[in-house]
Image (cartoon, rainbow, N blue to C red):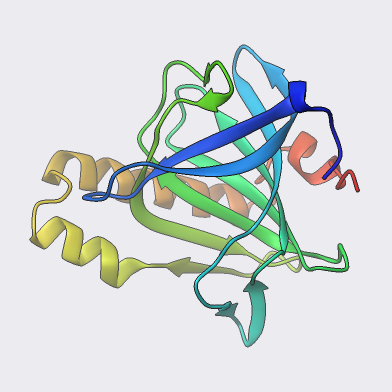
Length: 174
């Protein structure tokens, strides 16, 4: 992967009730409100949406991690760097983006949204979200906020205003 060791960073990702996991990547850009990190995916099994594989071992993702936002965005590419779409995780907002070479812990709230290149979208992991609420892995208040944020993003997708232009414009560094 491109970049020197100075740009190596780990994305710290937690899905309750599990401990945080570190995923290696390299820092493409950092501002006070956003990190852009490129990484190769490591998956247990391929993920398919609309009959297409959207995530598999060694697929590429460019992650946009935002300060104080209820979501992150991954721009996904296959092994040949063909763009596949956007993966949007609903997450607890983080207030500090980086701690040394690690992101602050990103806590996943189970709901995800896939947005295809044709702007067709699909809500993912709703069953896991429902189970997390039922078993109190996330509070009802947090669950309501997650559902509200997902709905807001979907409305923005339907208006053709999501993801932001800088997300759409970025290309992989290979």
